[in-house]
Length: 363
Ligand code: GLA
Image (cartoon, rainbow, N blue to C red; front, side, top):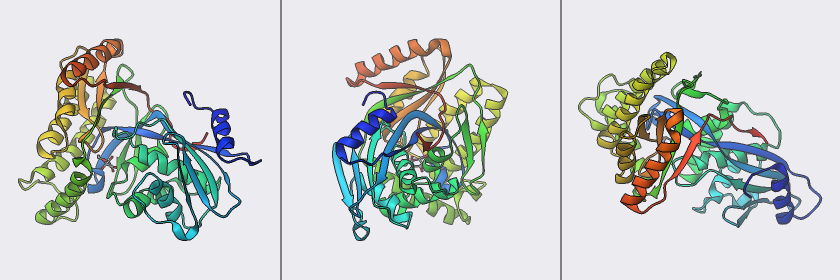
């Protein structure tokens, strides 16, 4: 499915679930985090935006009492009964996990198609969770924040990833043309409009180092230990880092989100770019979640004309960088960064120009 439409989804749905049912359609986007990395589970500030890549679900009630899911990307099917919603260690866990936390089990046929690249740090899992949750709710209303919390719970408790709330939040509540600055403690948010004379460009390193998952858990634990050492409940409350590198990243990154918000409001692209690079250096040296390829992409990007700043985005250990680029330099940037990366790693980086998209909803 090159360009996803309701018709293309309906045709695939009919192929996999023959019968008269006419499905409903749902969509949830992936995201780029502009700044505020590894701060969400420390109850700090983040500033993500949704992107134009989404996960789509076509859904209709099933008549055999089972929940069925079929992924067009993987050409793989799963099915569950109410008693069999158990983690299996694969993509189906996101579907089963959401079904489980939504409590009232729905026998449904789901056809899932995703444009969000996996392993790219663009939150394909949150997009899957939110789109499946909407499909299972089948039009029943739920407070958006409750939906976001449930999807995070599915990931924390069922899939077993101790993630923060950023990805589900932005996939669920994003607004077109704006980023959101989210306070992960009280879950208040405000919209942030980016200056018009800049383009957000993600560059996918196309690598994903295995270390990522275990390092994420380790960082969550290290932050809890640092908070204990500092005598605060969580690192959001910390005013000093006590010489701890992890705390230093979190405390300084929270401050950078606030500075970035001010720089956006002032249209100060150079300051925004500086904060991007400072965020990357902090993730590279203090938080130690970057990798050689991401560092190379950032170091290269900031030497290219028209680039205000660059940093890794998402959990790290591979995936994407996010770059702030002058509109008339984006083509040249794309050509140079892919060429230099190819020469160094023999890997074809992918480049995504992104404007902030709307959050999850009917399609
Ligand atoms: C992953 C997690 C998020 C967040 C980021 C890092 O994307 O799912 O909750 O912690 O890493 O900022």
